[in-house]
Image 1: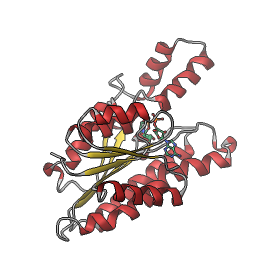
Image 2 (image 1 turned 135 degrees about the horizontal axis):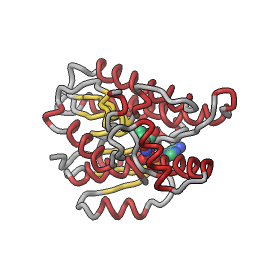
Image 3 (image 1 turned 45 degrees about the vertical axis):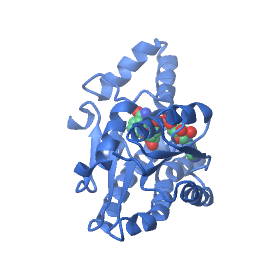
Image 4 (image 1 turned 180 degrees about the vertical axis):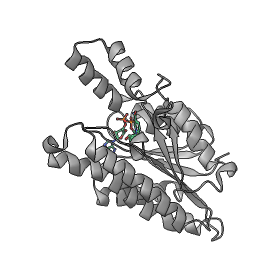
Length: 260
Ligand code: NAD
């Protein structure tokens, strides 16, 4: 379905970003990966799906590096048709103890990076399809874009912000073939969440399994983690013809978290 299209997924060396990159690659899209840590493993996983894959190591807290990444993607594959703004970090502390540099980093990586990548991707998307426009911008927000939790001030502010950015991007392009939507996962068992499980297990002196059950039990009625594969399938839907008029939604996949 996405043969000949190019998808750039930020923060795709791990977790949800890698899951979405694999789902888009399975539909035939060429992939530009980004993120830190092991690159060869994710690159090989994508290449095994029979598409072209490139990698750019932009630090998403740095606008000049994001500009370089967008130019690189256009040079490699012509243009970016699908942009998935996914890179994100977490820091947990009460507001009065929240380190200022952590606040700045969370806002830069989880929110401002999406603004920069979006502003740089839009002109080519708007010009595509003989000027009628074609493009898909998918922002990985969170249930924390819709509701709050204590001790996550920067994260909740950034995620509420990216839901707002999603709506504005969708409205400004509503008469074109460029859509923008957000995905709002509940708990997904990635390295970002495993750190919170580890902290809980250490603080309460309980096992890894017991800490996971506690984490789910507090917020997620299904008592199940959402998987990167399930989120990848939702991203594929947004890119499909059936997603043509889905604009500006914040779609939760959260085991009932925000239904309460
Ligand atoms: P993860 O830690 O597995 O992956 C984060 C990715 O972002 C990695 O590839 C990492 O290298 C990259 N990254 C971090 N800082 C970066 C930077 N400065 N520049 C470039 N890349 C950077 O985490 P994840 O759980 O897969 O999170 C991905 C997204 O999903 C985040 O936006 C997160 O807020 C969101 N999310 C996660 C959950 C969850 O439960 N795991 C729930 C809701 C939303």
